[in-house]
Image 1 (cartoon, rainbow, N blue to C red):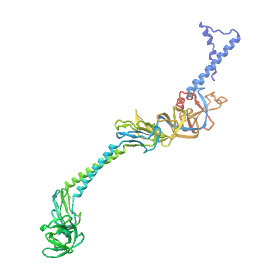
Image 2: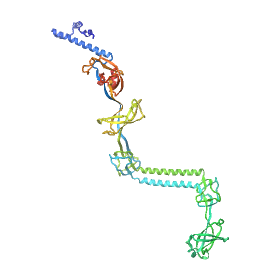
Image 3: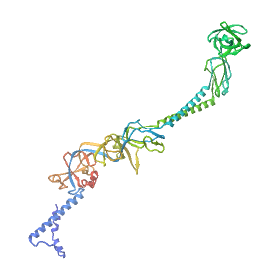
Image 4: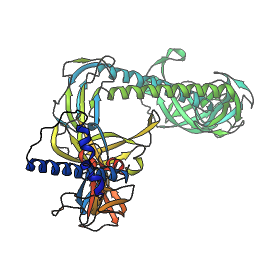
Length: 549
């Protein structure tokens, strides 16, 4: 200690000032009074020297002055690092029920506060108009289907019955239109002849009886079968009353419609003759326009009912068929739209949840254009919070992390949530990007949708970590450790901040207020914490930076 500088106020220079006519202090005139004055001057000089050494000298060495440190003990703590933010809690899902159709409400079997399940009927509207539209659409589909089937079927020319092709009237490449003859088909395997019998005799003849048929000219007889007996009487030759009896015979091969015959049923003879009739003779004509693309038979071909004789096609025929197909599809779509519209007259709950609004009741009329929400449903099985995460913290946040949530509206309570997902669809404002994170709360107590909350996403936790206040760390990795004589006997006050040493430490994680020490200190050691960092102006790591500056 520089004693000379401390005692400088006692040099003879002081009395010289009194000779310059300055007011003289009133001092005791006794020797005891002079002695007290001398010791006061000495004490003031000592204090002045102490200030110069500890305050000014300490600051020149980069250390806070005496009284600017407080001691703190190295101890174990649970450290939690979190990413914080704010937001508004909302239901996990909400739905505003709006009508898609117009009509009178017939039923509305629910009330505000009711729990509804997905699919429950909430409103039923009068659907008479929709039901009539469906009937009209069904008729349109039937008509379009028939038109398509008729055209598609008519592109194949078919025989009307079994027989033998007598003549083919078209050939491949011909253009035909509806009514154009395509082929002659006749069935000559079975012939019939219709003969007059006297009315009194005909009454004794029944269908199915055997008959003898005599061919005119050759007088050859063939067995036959009565096919029918007319109930009407006609006037025959000579004015006698007759009835027509139709008899069927098998053609031995040479008979034609040009041959005539008579017949007898038992011992009852006919009263005249008649020509044979073929069982079938048909000129098959085209029912649609088109080009003959295929002829399937030749003269003499045996055919059955429905056998294909020729096929029509070509560009015009295919175009007409495609038009019919399009018309059919349009009719089917119109029918489906009508059926879908009918479903809209029964309004069901789109989600499971709680009804929080009911704005329309039975008897009201709703308009799908002007109507607002018929009802509002909240799914309150969870609440969710959308919180923006800074691009600097994005890598720390992941799905599943716990979240501590507080609300000013419910002081003193902490609600537990978890990160559900973090979107990578960020929003950039003034060169800074944030990303939305969705947080779910299953047990949300008294929180209600719409409340503003604060959230801390716990991104890291260190249990039982050896730690010190973050403000005690100097220049990144050093701390001040008190030596002997630095602290008061009770260890609570710094007496001499010059009796310290700097010690390098290795840091781990931290929570902003405390930092983990992985090496360099032991549990129970004491470190000095800058007082300005503890007092308020600069706290945590900011306080550490101020103390080291």
